Amino acid sequence: MNAPPESMTAPAPPVETGLRWSNRYAALGTAFHTPLPPQPLPGPYWVGQSRATGALLGLAPQWTESDELLQALSGNRPIAGSTPLATVYSGHQFGVWAGQLGDGRALLLGETEGGLELQLKGAGRTPYSRMGDGRAVLRSSIREFLCSEAMHGLGIPTTRALCVTGSDAPVRREEIETAAVVTRVAPSFIRFGHFEHFAANDQLDELRRLADFVIDSFYPAARHSERLAGNPYAALLEAVSERTATLLAQWQAVGFCHGVMNTDNMSILGLTLDYGPFQFLDSYDPAHICNHSDTQGRYAYARQPNIAYWNLFCLGQALLPLIGDQELALAALESYKSVFPAALEARLRAKLGLRQTESDDRGLIEGALRLLATERVDYTIFWRRLCDYTADGQAAPVRDLFLDRAGFDAWLRQYEARLAREDAAAAAATMRQANPKFVLRNHLGELAIRQARQKDFSGVAKLLALLEHPYDEHPGHEAEAGFPPDWAASIAISCSS
Ligand code: AMP
Ligand code: MG
Image (cartoon, rainbow, N blue to C red; front, side, top):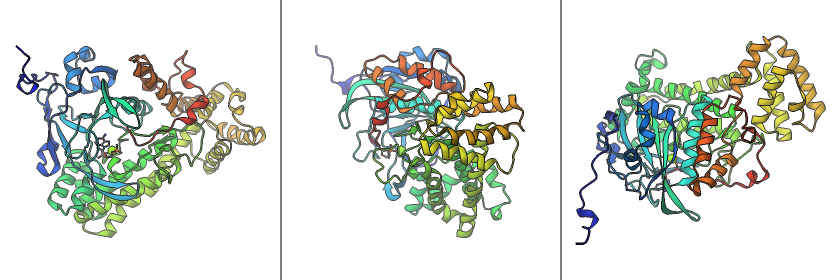
């Protein structure tokens, strides 16, 4: 007898993960989401796994060996207790109102007992897929996986990643690639765009329900704040502005370019969210544009802080019906203008090992950045070599990064004099924790991706191990801490993912 057609086979039984699930987002109501199962992905295999994220979730350590979990996280079997759904949001893309967007390829599985949500990105088409195929390709999934964990290693707020699973199923982009799914983890994936969606559609009940949910779950102090006339929605906007300001300071200090800072990619929790054409700076160029699709340079490195403010302004507009007073909304946004520069200065001072504050410090910081920009010096290597200099007094390695030795020496003399008023050992220790040796440079990701395409996933695992502890020395891995090869400059990363 022939095998029965697929529709007649018994459905695969749910996989028991040991996690206990709820889905408070689903409970907000049907206006917020569409329930639907992931689309199966044939012949899945593990591409990358983060044991740290597994431990965070409370998964038993053997999860990395579980074929059942591999199938479940690839969409081939349901997870017991989870209720997959796609959420709806809208947003401004490249400065223009884009209308309704939504999870076009991500499914929220639910929330675990520990308060973490799991999402499968690349799990198939949803009602919000528009023209997209609902899939994510191996290349961009590896980048998202590694960068999520790299950012966490750097101490920068981010969504986390549990794993990437791959399949040989073809996916059409500029060329034919293969499909993958990233399992993402965060307390919430709510974006500015979720608020914009309900505001734009005059769904004020839903807007209020969403805001109340976010306040009660993540910003409870906003309910009791006496600032901003005791208005909880203004207090929420202020708190989000502050978190976003802190996040942007961390991005700028480490040389991270997000690449697509559309309002639908902005986390209400101030997390780095939606890793697409991101890049860590190689040479220091404030005008650097990492997204090949960003022809106007809207999201150039140096513009990121202003764009974040622009995005917060959109959030403020969306919250205005709840705040009820434009002056109050504007006042709530003001905090960004003080928190961002203060946070950035604090980060840069730490990079220089300056623990006391002196009035001339800003000049010292600006002087360093000017030198770096003039000569397009490698950003990460400069700071790490400066760390070494404070520890061992050898100026040559850092000086060798500059053609204008006299210019650099003049700055170094100023720095030395300033450093003399710090505790030298403490300064060096601060610098070691502020200046990573390892960042996920484009070419490093690219090399791991090329290997992974040949089914060799050791490069992904190796990079993960380095990037989880980016401030450590990792002897024997000088190549991964070195200058990018010439071909790195020709890597073009676009929105296509
Ligand atoms: P992004 O630029 O990745 O932040 O995506 C912007 C919007 O396009 C979001 O609504 C995504 O869900 C959707 N999207 C991106 N790629 C795809 C795809 N391959 N299939 C379906 N939707 C997609
Ligand atoms: Mg997005």
